[in-house]
Length: 202
Image 1 (tube, rainbow, N blue to C red):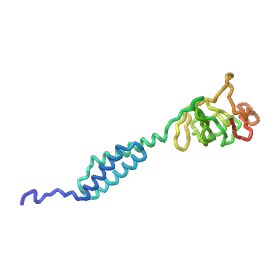
Image 2: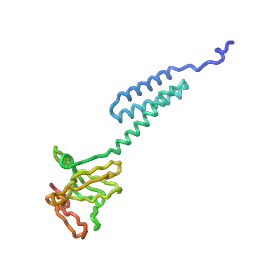
Image 3: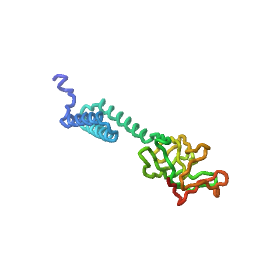
Image 4: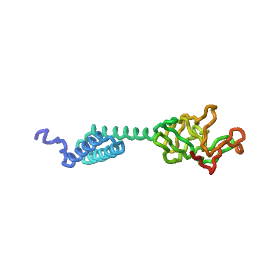
């Protein structure tokens, strides 16, 4: 009896070849896909077929499995970074104006962290949207203000302000919506803005 007759390498099954081809197929699809969500979905398919290859007890294509896992991880990190995108608005090309305070204004001059805002660009005013700013920087703007510029990072559950300023006239006074005016009845020193109907209108 020859040594080759007693020690045999396990034969690769038909299922093994099929599963390996599916891994390659989905990796190829992911490599060509530009949409990050679809790419992530294709890589998950590749990972699932790679696991089935191991169950078949064939010779696992470790290079393909490792590649799929690494690409899935990198894609997940990339998607996470996209969720933390930073936005910049600047008057007059593309800016934000504050339509309504969601939180109550306080005597210290602050109006909380939630506001209904409206984006304005050369194409016109966009829809009104509620934004919640993070507590890392408390906004000192309120309904009736337009922002000359603002930079913030979207963290998913809130928007972290990196800097901003309100739109001002030549005397450095805030430019307010036509139906809004300064009011010092609640905040004696800092003051607030009162808008007819509680909503700023331009």
